[in-house]
Length: 264
Image (tube, one colour):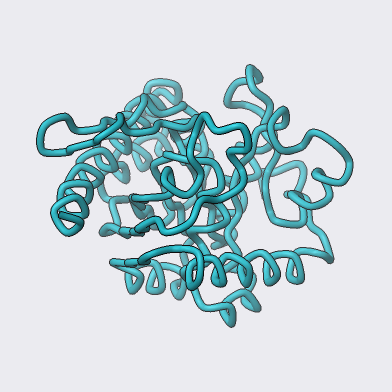
């Protein structure tokens, strides 16, 4: 194996993820007005396969992870592949020893702002994908809240430019994973940005989780060319990042319109 180190592991992972997912499900049931999930069969099929799974998701609020993965049955958490890995900023969530223990047990890879795409969290994410695990990423790298009175028919809410880390993860893999776009709607009404206590949820939001069709075919030619020694890694990384942003942005705009029309 080409990796020098392994992602961190913890004996607390299963109890912590079961606890957090259980609390998330209670919130879905009693703390929201509605929860719609479309395309869960696509995520189930990907996680049931022998390939790694990379989910790329828009980022409109804090707390979207681990809330959105809790759409899966709790019973699936006994299977290591169904426990998602994700990346989190050191200066935001790894701020003390207690938080570090908790988030490492929750399978969050620590990233360092300003350290570029060659840090260990990026190579660990690629390693996990090659081991047929699930990595969930928010490639915008920061929260992107729609404007007040958002109407996607009039003024769509585009994604921010993606960080190159998502492209770098894929160029490091030996086998292209299944890549699924995920569009989240309504979490910004749960965790309202700008309030004094943003992490405390509001209630009675309408939440939708939309899972799109696999899109790895859009980047497979670039990855195969790179693996055959026929491409430049930096340029390939950039092209892949741009392609994935366009795919998720297009999918998200369709979802926004549908969800807006259903709420009228």
